[in-house]
Image (tube, one colour):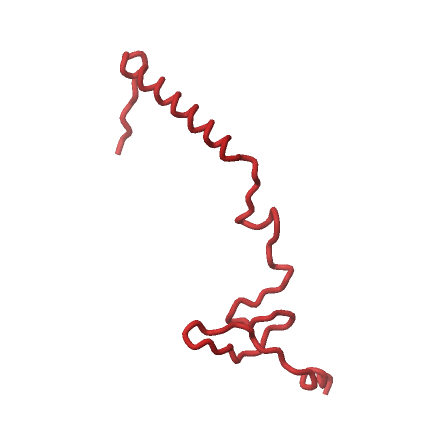
Length: 96
């Protein structure tokens, strides 16, 4: 009986609640987590934080920088259109 401590400690219950009834999940919480395996229990080591998270915003491009880029692209499009209209450059149609 090497695992006596498992039965002696009270089991943590999953903290997830049903939207429809508001009742708590009856499953035991996963080791070291507040929820069961069905409700997204994850180890702290597997959770991504900061720059490693896929939704991390680097902040290198501000709204004013985006606005300037859009203005410059609009100028380039206008120049390209005027050159095409004058016949100086040609555009080739893409093959479908």
